[in-house]
Length: 85
Image (cartoon, rainbow, N blue to C red; front, side):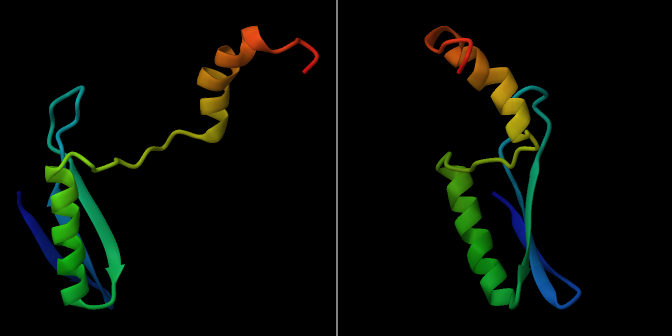
């Protein structure tokens, strides 16, 4: 697993190779910034690499609450609730 830290303005950012996209197989990078020191950025970088290696990495999603409610929640409860609910 590879990762690196670089300075952006007054803070530090880390970049690591995350798990590949399950649909396309393309490489995905995980980036997190805002660390006040390079040492803190490296510590978080190592922790993030460990989470990816253990399979505990959760990718950010752009899904909205409204989309979740309409696509999953409403169909799931439709049979168990009255129409006037």
